[in-house]
Image 1 (tube, rainbow, N blue to C red):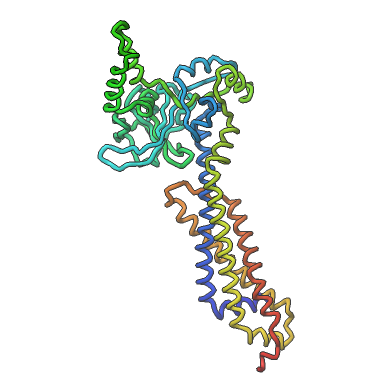
Image 2: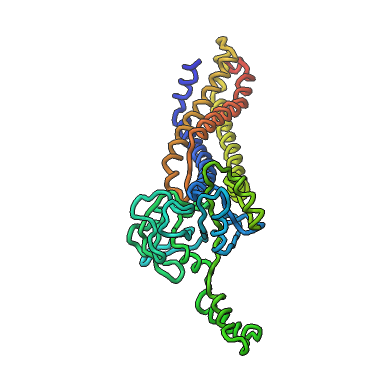
Length: 400
């Protein structure tokens, strides 16, 4: 039985191998699409892991800071730090923009504002490949190597220039954008402060408003204008829970007494994975379904065509007494052999081109195992049409 299938493959090996290569590229694309989805989930989990937080305190009735806009006053952190069960609390800001190296290229990045000089606080990069953490309150940056920046490079963020003093890895946003860490004061100014022209226009409008420009109340206009040009907002407060306390137990009084929204790690995973990337997951699922149907159609067509090309040989086999089961097994083995070649080619191709993708592609062994099983099942089902044709062949055709 094996020799029959092998000899038939040898007779048309070129068509068989070329078909296997074409099928392999389709399987490679399928594995890559699954890897893209896995990479998106891994990016979301890396964002939460790298934050070093157990709780995320955000503006009330929002799902910030990653899925929605959130704005808190930066003095809220002091009251949260004094709550029972809180080991550490730190302000943080997030905003995505194009950062540009001085004299170099631009890169899409998530700019993160953190408190400098305090090691181990939530929100800070956990490990560095080179350099050091932020030590000064202004004009220093720690960047992910995916930005393409190196130690000593100058990067432009809004109106100021920052020197890269540290490099880290896999510090990315939920969308896969690399992170750039700068001091919290600079980040507040970059995110919330208006440009100079807008500030001048606001001062003119405020001065023209009699409610603020009162001659009888000296200093009122200056106080209002100073308030307009200052930035005291952050996007969230990251909280690390003390040993022996559960996240839910610490979150309840903060949410009740501070009138804020508090998310645990499980809540943030639900927001990022089940909501933020849900549409992308459905789209990838549609592509996978289409690629599966196309792969099955290709295998079915090739095996059917090869079977039609040897109708006379099948009739001779029947004439000499070969059982239908043997003939069916021969065709099934050809289909499975095509699937094995295709899967090997696809797995190798996906492994080679995955690192080239701009976003992180995570190829898991379990996905490869499931993919191999699905490929064998598709090939087996696709061979049924050819098997039906072969079993209906009349032995008399051998001598007609």
